[in-house]
Amino acid sequence: MKTLQTLIDIQDPGLPELQAMLSEAERPCELLPPSSGNDDVLLHLQVTTRSLLGTVAYETGGIVIDHGWLRILGSGHARLSRNLKDWNADASRGYLLIADDAAGGFFALNGGGLGSDVGALYYWSPDSLTWEALEIGYGDFLGWALSEQSQLFYEGLRWASWQTDVRTMNADQCVSFFPFLWTREGSPDGSSRKVVSVEEQFALKCELADSAT
Image 1: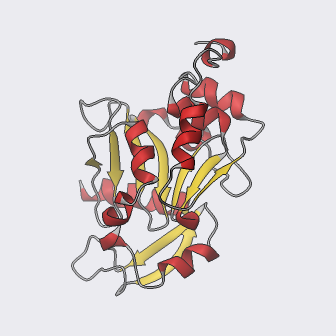
Image 2: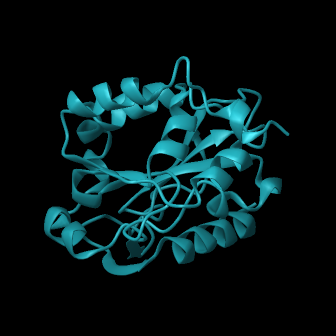
């Protein structure tokens, strides 16, 4: 286990790079201040603050994009209580959950449980029961999330009133659709929508995915 002093990079920190990315963002974004538990989060991850992942974990409470549609996890905040340590307490999964969205989709870094491409980013879409490889790393993911490209990615997963609905949720909530979007009958506008906790939605997807295998 590396010590906190080893993980905090003073010579070449990643914070200026993150700040530059946020200043050039093409989508509305908000950087949440770090929590008092940021030391524990960084120690849990064992990555340095030279990396963007370590920077987000230590220097932020998370990043909220598109008024809450996309939530990138950090050390936790009153508006985004999940953090990179507690949200990843189950190490047996073989991946690190790093972000999620208001439609009930989840982003994770592969730790070996999703394939041989360790360190690559995967997405668990609301309209699928399997993880999809995105063939990018964490830094590219941040750049993508802040760009207009993310709008094209979400075109088939947004419903007509999504902007209004997202503003009424908090960043620990998402929409649960029924019929499920991975069924023939399901669709973002045609299915009924219920606001649930992200924890509840993730547990449900895990249960349904396990039963489908």
